[in-house]
Image (tube, rainbow, N blue to C red; front, side, top):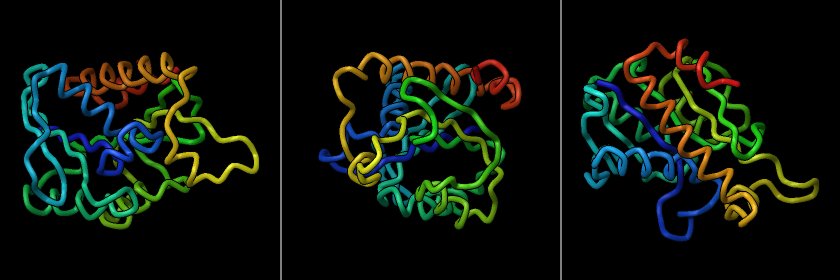
Length: 186
């Protein structure tokens, strides 16, 4: 079984914000495979299904971004889920809009959702797909930027990035993460 955690904030006011690209990717992956993400468990919305012959659980923490690790830990403890089967999908300021970067370990890099997951799992070693949101112009507050919506001029890059993230997630289900990184890190 594989489990994929998309990071974001619950509520309609956050739906289309930069900080919610992890949720957006999971929603598209769920739509591609007819999975409903609607079970409320482990402080998250969860959807279970089979993707490419692999039982897959899609998880959207409902704890708000900064407490994402609480939901991840609750899921791990309840289902005895293995961290080696986890992929976390989230927004990254240091990656250009439209691009994705895959990593299997590393620091939080200032991302509070990842910081919370590291704190609650006790390790920096878990697979992740970072979805680019670029950095704001100097003087623009980071919090306002990540909680802002994508401008129309980035719509095409955003859609392409979400689609590529779903392709990478699908590929990772029956390939090693190293092979997935080699294919999708450009």
